[in-house]
Picture 1 (tube, helix red, strand yellow):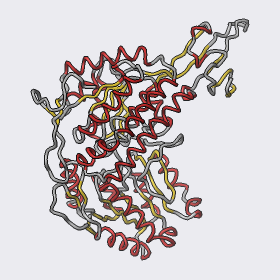
Picture 2 (cartoon, rainbow, N blue to C red):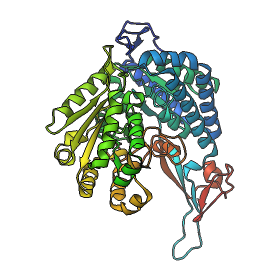
Picture 3 (cartoon, helix red, strand yellow):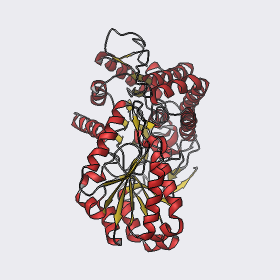
Picture 4 (tube, helix red, strand yellow):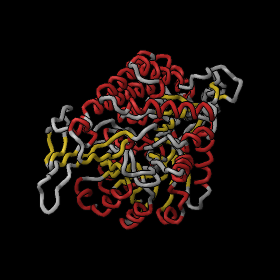
Length: 520
C-alpha cells in the first residue's frame, strides 16, 4: 500500500472525496503518491513477483480467500464510507460487496484447480526420421507487475479488490492499484483489508500497492514505468485511449485491457412488440434508470419499426420516464457530463425529447430523459451513436427492415446487443443476428443488458471502442488469461519443468498431451 504517508497528512497535494448528496468534502484527505513513491512501489512489486509468481495456485487461492474474509469482516464501515462517497444505496453496495467476495473466491478456485494455464505436452520422438522431433511443452505464465485502475461506478466490484485485481493475483502477478479519486476512503479501507491478508499469508509486501492521485500524473507514469507489464482499466474512452497510446509508445509496449463503455443497443422486432410491448418497455425503463443509469451496460439505444403497435410501446416509455424521480449521480463531474451530453443530443436537428423525469434541486441530481429520432437522421449524425453516461436512452424509429439493418451496421463495437423477438423472428432474422455478432461481445435474447454474471462463460468485452482488446474479458473465468503469456519449454528434463507440464501431472490438470485432452 501507500505506506509512506497516511490519511490526514496534507503536506503535499491530496485527494479528498466529495459527498455527492450534500456536495460537502469528506475527511480525511489522502496524500497523493509522489513519483518517487511510485517508483519504489513498482520496484517492490517487481521483487515480489519473482517469488509470488512461483507459488502454487493453492497458495494464491488462500490469499484471495483471506482478502474476501477480511472484506466481509470489515463490510459495515466499507459500505458506510462507500455510501457517503458515491450516494449509491446501501442495499446496492451490500450486493456489490457479496459479488466482490464471490469473485475473489471464484478466481481463487480457478487458480487452485489450475487448468486455466492451458498446459500442452508434445512428447519428443528422438528416433523420428528424417529428423528427430523435439519434446515441446507450453503453458500460460504470469506477466509481471500489473497496473489496475479503479472505476467510478463500482467502488467495490470494479475497484481495489475487484475483478482486475483478483484476476491478476490469481494468475500469479503483483498488483499496483491506482485509486479512483471519487472514492478514496472506500479504496483505502479495502486496500488495508488486502494488505492485512498479504501479511497474514506470509506474502512479500510488494504483492499489492495502493496509489493515490487527483489527476492523471501517477496513472500515466504507472503505465509508462518500464517494470509494469500490463494494464487493466475500466472507464471513459478518453482515458482508455490515452493509456493505450502511452503503453504503445513505450520502448517495450505492453497490453492495455481497457473497457471504455458502450451504448448497448436494444432491437425490438415487430411480433415481439405486438405480443409484449408493454412488458418490454417496463424492462427497458428499469434497465436504463438502474443505478441512475451509471452502468457500462446501460441500454442507450432502442431500435424498432415505427408503426401503430410501436406507438403504444413508445407511450408506455413516455409514461414511465415522466414519473421517474431524479437520482444523485456518483460525482459532480459525471453529473455535469451527463447534462451536457443530453443537451448536445437535443441540439441535433430531428432529435426530440419525449419525456423528462421529475426534477430535484439537490446537488448532482439527474433526471431520466427519453429522446427520439428517425433512423435517417440517426444514420447521418455520428454523435447520436455516442454513449451518454447516465439515465437516458434514444429511441431510433425505423420505417423498414432495411433501415434497422443499416442502423445495426452503422454501430461501433459494443459490450452488448439485445434482441427482443419471437422464435420465428429469431429464425428469420439471421442477417441482423450475424451483424450484431460482429458488433458486440455479449448477445442477449429477450432480456436486458444490465447485470453481468460472474461465471465460466461470461464475456464482458467487445470490439473496439467498447474494449481495447476484444479477445479478452474483464468478468468470468477467462479474465485471468489477460494477465498471462504463453511460455514454451523445449527438451527440458522432467524435474526442471513447471509442475503443470511434468509427465506425472502432479497437479491433476486437464491438459492436451500428444493431441489428446484429459487429466493425464
